[in-house]
Image 1 (tube, rainbow, N blue to C red):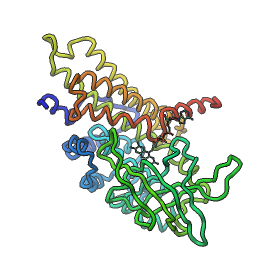
Image 2: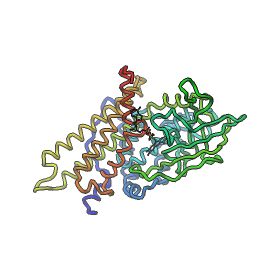
Image 3: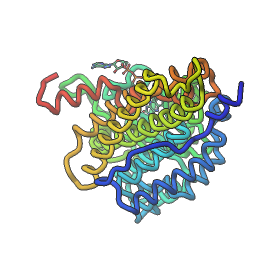
Length: 402
Ligand SMILES: Cc1cc2nc3c(=O)[nH]c(=O)nc-3n(C[C@H](O)[C@H](O)[C@H](O)COP(=O)(O)OP(=O)(O)OC[C@H]3O[C@@H](n4cnc5c(N)ncnc54)[C@H](O)[C@@H]3O)c2cc1C
């Protein structure tokens, strides 16, 4: 590996757009704080974590010191609730250097927020202060071996037995589940009798990872997000107390879906951060490397490609922070959530493709940062609702009966 490629393992300060209508001085200061933290603390080990497929637990207390795990937890339970814009700025800045770290924070934060929304006072008092300090991770257990997009088709089943519930089934692709901080998973399981649709209602349960009969499988070897932990879960006659039920019986899934519409916004922000990183790194590369006696950047085709990457990134950023602004101001944002998740994640794939192309052979070498971003981009159009689902939601928001 030459110095030229190695120089692309770290973040460079590039050109990114200010968003005057969405950012005030406090948010700009917050963005700068997270950016400096990301560059100084997260960036140096990013390549190594990626090559070693390693979640680094030592980063968690540092992320916690910055307050990142408490941003979606209410003050009464030890959090420092922030607006959506500030949360997304933080996720964007983390993804600019390491998307695996960004998704670790994202999933911990949305799961804690869901517990804050659905849990009883005792569960919240016991768990949320720890979650807000990054000392405990709550995980989100919805996807199953046989259903992801069709998430209401839940095979995992919880049966009432006297005062207890007995849980059987399996979950798949669960983020953070094998980390040392993981203490609980919010598990979605069918309960009761099938309704008119032929499906059983789906409830949510708070399940401790050390419950007898609960097993966490080995980490998946993945294309990207190597520094995040993803595992399958298995439940065999796991006995849970009545209070483990979160929210009303048969309502947990619907409640979670309604509450978590906002979770698409941080994935869009992650996509913006990844695109920005690809843009920064590519500008630096094409200004430095030469072909046919000129800098790459002096070939019009190359310069135009970079210009298009900048335009695409600006578009993704604008729709993302538009959705954040609407959420923060109590304006309806459902359509915007689907649009920004769809557009920003597709753009991240296009921009990272262009970045690897413009890096030539270096763009195919694992140690090159844009190669890592290219691999990390792939999941962005899949997780938190695929691009097909976002298209469905947008079409329905236009009154189309699809
Ligand atoms: C690294 C990683 C981390 C994850 N973390 C979590 C987590 O923490 N918790 C969790 O619960 N899940 C998690 N997931 C799961 C993720 O949310 C799902 O993979 C995703 O929702 C897609 O579901 P699926 O994999 O079952 O694909 P499927 O639902 O089988 O979809 C396959 C394809 O069919 C398309 N499709 C399906 N239905 C339709 C339709 N009606 N119209 C058009 N196209 C359709 C999809 O868009 C997709 O392209 C994670 C996944 C990964 C890879």
